[in-house]
Image (cartoon, rainbow, N blue to C red; front, side):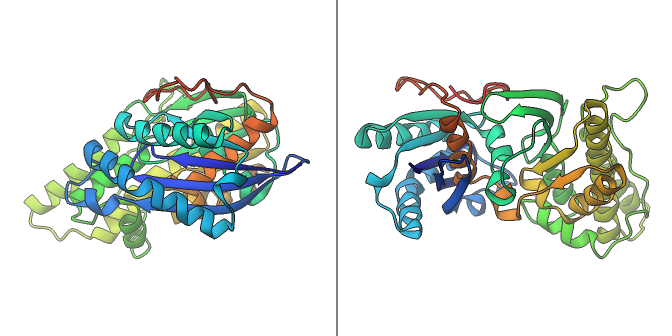
Length: 348
């Protein structure tokens, strides 16, 4: 009998509620995906303010859930299980979602699963492209995370191959956007400007690509600083700064490192499928270069549509469906959010 899974996401600045249907054959169908973003409230600060995010989640949680059920044409009583992001993320923001999920689960008397936000970014691909092959390599790129992960079972077995040692890719985009006087968040405006620029105009460094560097780790702090220094030196010399060329050259450096390491990891791990997800996965140059390099290497590339790449409730509902299908243990009602939840812990 098909089951309806409700997913709640509140790890950062998006309040997401998703509804999926888990069919008897293990396939997962998306029924609703509603998101309320507080990004405009953070824009004037140039980054996410935790207390502002927490308050926004409190205000948006119930209305977002109501919209999701209206979209799906379902009632609360139709829910068979609930999944909620238990971590990683901002402590206060996570607690809002976890508290809401506990309230819904108690009122409806349905099982509750605390799941990993990062695993959700991988599981969401199944809503668009179907079941994941095993193993699969996942490249997660967002404002807070840049990781290469080997996934042997989305419900239970995820191994980190590499991660960022400083700034995440999305964080570097935000900081470079500030240097170029572009709006926050920096990803979309830099991507737009880069399309009008020359990616070979400036030879920005490729972090952690030397022979002594960790094979699958990332570093974007040096790149961010290099962009800031280049702009500073150009302005001091009285030279015109082409925002488009700087954006294109910066973006090329990020996409080059991300895709090169992903291809290398896939080859060394003997994995034939790469999934790219997270907010930065919506970047046009990253998708383009990944497609080129995957085709050359004979690797299948899967990238969820942009709406599914950013934080949302659908990805948590999708992961919850896989956890339910795998028969994983239900979370105790006294579990707490874990801002530092490691990616190898898929569910609590």
